[in-house]
Amino acid sequence: MTVLALILVGLGAGTIAAMLGIGGGVIYVPALVAFFSFAQPEAAGTSLAVIFASMIIAAATHHAADRVDWRAWLYLTATGVVGAAAGSLLAQRADELVLRRVFAVLLVIVAARMILRVERERRGSPADGDPEIT
Amino acid sequence: MPYPLRAALLGLTAGFGSGLLGIGGGVIIVPGLVLFLHFDQARAHGTSVAVIVPAALTGALVFAGGGEVNWAAAAYLLIGASVGAFVGARLTGVVSKVWLARAFVVVLLVAAARMGLGS
Image 1 (cartoon, rainbow over the protein chains, first blue to last red):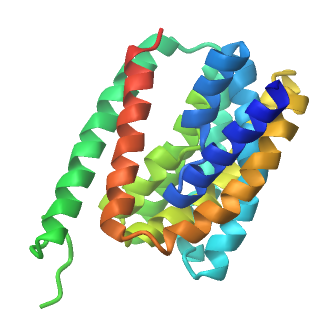
Image 2 (cartoon, rainbow over the protein chains, first blue to last red; image 1 turned 180 degrees about the horizontal axis):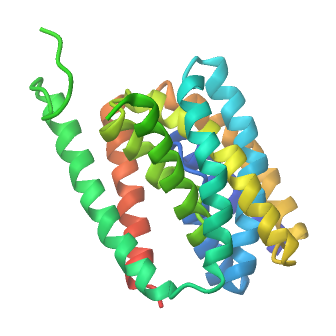
């Protein structure tokens, strides 16, 4: 039963993650903690392992459809690997609660900006700061 | 700010957040690509997925070194996630960009609620 539940969580999270360009940790970590009684670090570690393997398949599929900008990938990866290593090491000693609250506020601001931009574009007027060819 | 610098800054921020909070980094990369580097929504999602692969590997290796990966659970999750990864990536090309952005905003708000309200 647990096996089937894990497979279904993977199916749902993998689909949403690949479609929306996220890893899926936002689904895996709370699901593992809430439904499978994982401790937070074990949930994060297991989530990252699944994300790595499943996103290889997603990346190959996106690449086949020409949706991967490899120049941007190179820049983001070169610095991303350094940032990830530093963040993982710092996670063991940081004040997690404060970090989470700050990060939550940032996400809400970003969400508001994204929705404003897409709704403006939908109405045919350019979002501010965008290069517009007329 | 020149493009390489903006891209590098985004990568550093996304990788750091990913390692620190145990998330894939996409919640930072996708908005960064769209709002900061002016990517098309679908291309931002595809590129983000490709960036997540090495970033997640780095994070996973650190956690695995600390014995914090449950390999049996990871294997079962991966059975479903492999199928989902293929289907989901194909859906990016089918769903309209407006709805991709709206769905992404829902994920951002869920992530924010989890981060802000969790203990």
